[in-house]
Length: 173
Image 1 (cartoon, rainbow, N blue to C red):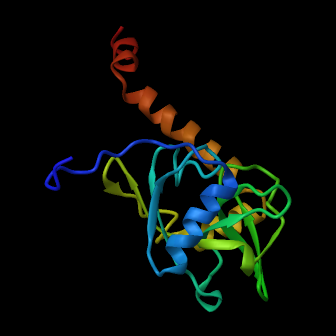
Image 2: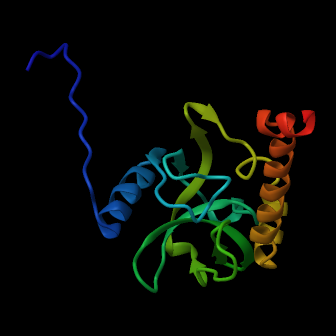
């Protein structure tokens, strides 16, 4: 292969333990890492396929509302969820699109990093990562975030229905 040609990139599926090792290796060397988010537990703020950027984090800089990447001790899964409560070096984390269940207490040693940026279709997503994250965490901790989001979705689609071409045709008759 010519040294001037780019190295081909291929997809590789890894299990949670291998993913955690890859993230740790990059973070331990002080590098940020990016990957595409799977799943819907953080909708609407992080959607499946969004590019998330994970950076090293120190214990003292973590705040309620931060989106943390960690290996859940109960099952070894790598998760990307929001810190909704902090007590000492323990973090209660929860997915934004999870109505009731949280992940239990996560110790600092189980953290892999913090999401500091999200991109959707190459454009930054700020709400939930930079702005509003503390309020989102409060609603989530009180199990009110999913109902609020669902109500907002209904209102949004109601307005869209009012102003859609089908709605205009019905009002003209």
